[in-house]
Image 1 (cartoon, one colour):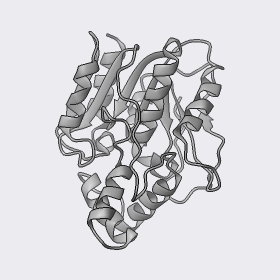
Image 2 (tube, helix red, strand yellow):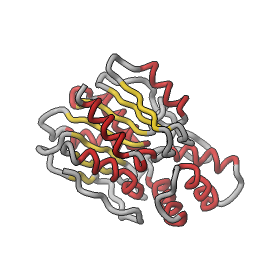
Image 3 (tube, one colour):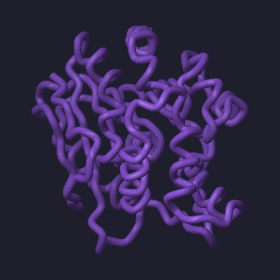
Image 4 (cartoon, helix red, strand yellow):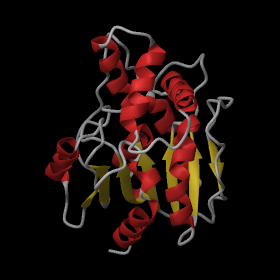
Length: 252
């Protein structure tokens, strides 16, 4: 059973991950490293949770901790070791990248992997897009984040100031080494487990062409699903159809 995460506002951080639902109950696990944007995952989580038992694994980095995605992967492994059977993994953006790295390392523990807005180069996140824009547009962080808030969403779900603050918090807590001087890259490639990659035609970060690059790594049975609209957070505005597609993929 899915338990709703905290609403879109500033949240205390911790290096220790939080998990909803007991180990024995979960059929699928949503992996997130973006606590302040977690509410945008909830519509799809609720749709899926009405048909299967969905847990949420959440990682939030302390301000004093070094930026390292492998730390999140290691903590996810510590949780996954407590499971008695393989489980479906899902994740959006950087959370999806963490799930992807984990699935490559421990395929025997993963039943399938479903990614939302994850490029074939997994480090191409909205955070990287922000630093590119910050380099090109010589203005304040708030101004760039406000411009990004307009481009990331097909239809903004909250007041612009609230979205800007949520993006700022997420930017500060992301376990990546992106900066104005350096954009991190992550290993590219496929996975041994069944894979579904989802995106949107109007995603300003992970364009359809970048999503199509996954086809080089697809195995028989792997899928790609493209929403007609919805922006980078298309799963927020297209939860019902996405849930149907994911359930169909799991039953394949």
